[in-house]
Length: 196
Image 1: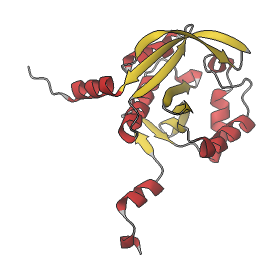
Image 2 (image 1 turned 135 degrees about the vertical axis):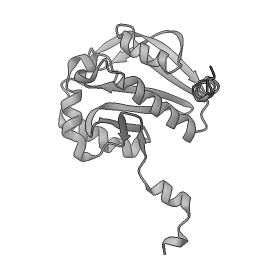
Image 3 (image 1 turned 180 degrees about the horizontal axis):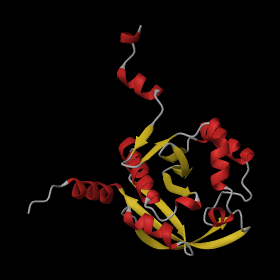
Image 4 (image 1 turned 180 degrees about the vertical axis):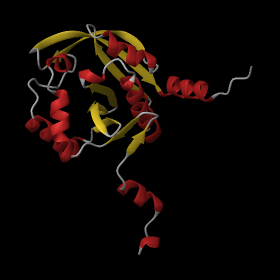
């Protein structure tokens, strides 16, 4: 009977959907494979993400969607006006290490969608996990990605070398971190009413 099911069980069974003023973020499904492949199949995107191959096919997209079920990685398809425009998520390459990642189709750059989606994913991360730290990286040749991280409150920690699949070698990246304390302060400041 429905009344015998506790509220947390119903909540856990429902897929997570995040909404912002312009975007909807939801788990990608196999029906999204063609749209994901169409958006991600751009060398410029692959050169700025560590794991995306180029060319990026529907087989790659299907493999990614299926792998999400086994890896525990949190990934959201970003939609604007019910149209997929990119991906955002939290990867956990090691225990106690969580990393924000995102990409948008080139046609959707420069409109603030990346920052809006990243903020939603960050809020979800800190609201649903007990982790106190989230890291992020931006290739040094990608100032737009660096701007997203800075607008979300991340603090620069230095430069690292990371391997990029599409270029077949390592490239320098700016490393960033966002602590739960900084995130909480930013949320409190944003929610504080101003009086004239």
